[in-house]
Length: 179
Image (cartoon, rainbow, N blue to C red):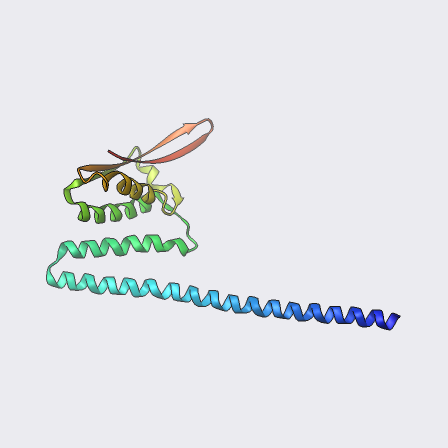
C-alpha cells in the first residue's frame, strides 16, 4: 500500500511538474511575442517621424511654409501622444497646452478663420502643475467635433486655467468652452 501511495504521489508530482513546465513555456512564448510587438511599436513611430521630417524638408525646399508648419505641428502632436507609452505619464500644464496648441493650429488650417481660440491662465505658476497626459486635448477635440463641425460657422475655443480652493484641498481646473 505504501509503495502504491508513493507511486500515486510521485505520478501526481510528475504531472504537476509537466504542467508547470508547459505553463512556463507558454508564458515565455507570450513574453517573446509582447517584446516583439513592443519593439515594432518603437520602430514604427521612428519611421513615421522620419517620413514626416522628409516631407517637411521637401516643403521647406519648395517654399511651402504653411504645409511645413502643418507637418511640424503634426509631428509634435504625435510625439506628445505617443509619449503615453513611456514611463512619464504626467507632464506640466505648459507641455499639455503646447500639444493643445499644435492640435488647434492643425484645426485652424482645416477650418481657416472659422476657428478662433485662446488659452488663458490666472497665474503662470499653474503652468508648472503636473497633470496626466492628454488631460485637456481630448476636451478640446470634443468641443471641435461636437461644437464646431456640425455648425460650419464661426466657432471659438477658450481654455481658461485657474485654481480654486475647496475646503482644505486645492483643485486645478482646466476648462474648455466652445461658443
